[in-house]
Length: 113
Length: 112
Image (tube, rainbow over all chains, first blue to last red; front, side):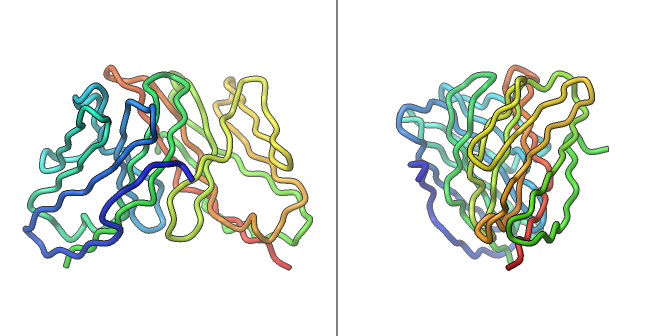
């Protein structure tokens, strides 16, 4: 096991609602990256948090936002949910650096109705 | 063109066979490379990092070809338990951060 945990495991929301997903990083890791994985696709990079700041962002709109806390855990918030937001949301824990190996949590499966 | 491309498969192979996957990347600034394994409806699990000199872990061998911009994964003596989707990931430094780009994955089915 990677030691990366995520909650909740499953979530069902309706369009327009807001959701918060949580991730606890592996002990000692200082960086958390969030990904969205649609069925049949590879994980898509949403953003990364390092030193409690957003440190890089993929092609996702501002309604996707996040936080990192002093203990390196992190939250992903999505506002004004759309049907296309239905996906597996993965967080990955790592050290910051060029050869960093990322270790994934079990994911949160979000369904938007 | 996608930054990281993989043949989606599926690759159907008999037990004991040797199978190889390639993954091409388009950004020459890519710095590090990885193979992940993902079982159905589970999270990706790191299989191995890919080093310039190539590396081997048991039945698995990974190679990097920077000149042609691809990485490969070779699985020898395939087991039923190797059935999964294999994702390649490329780590590049852009806009002040190290960003992983994943391929869509290659599905492998090992048949009895």
